[in-house]
Image (cartoon, rainbow, N blue to C red):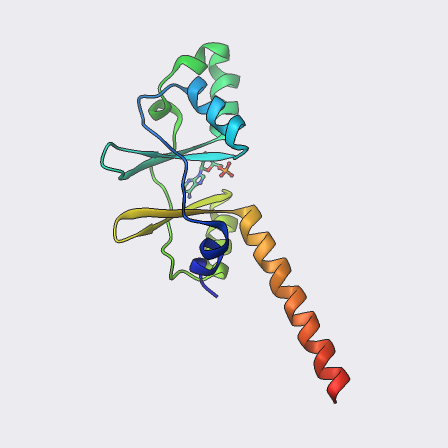
Length: 143
Ligand code: AMP
């Protein structure tokens, strides 16, 4: 199954932030939206980076509260691993596991079209396992 299936349920709205915005502004967005990462985009919507709660914890651990006034671009990860809607859910899980991150922006024809988190993947897998269980039960009952 592909990532498109997850986005069809979750939606394709992605929270983004411009690179010159401050870490403090980003923290407020993370808290308000109850999310763990924000995709950093340029004025044309192109993906420039990603900043997650882990980057912010690291920035504050190193620079103290003053880091909150830094630009997002200073603490974001610039080399972003993305996927397309045609990527398999399994493929996204593998990327997250090998790269040790929990968010993958979905890009279609150069445009951001969604974001899949580890929570989305786990939810999808639990539903898949439940469907398999029900199918096996029906198979046994009808045999
Ligand atoms: P996370 O587990 O998503 O909180 O992110 C852990 C670290 O990986 C942080 O430094 C993020 O900036 C970085 N990161 C998160 N998602 C990605 C991604 N898709 N590609 C590359 N780095 C990422």
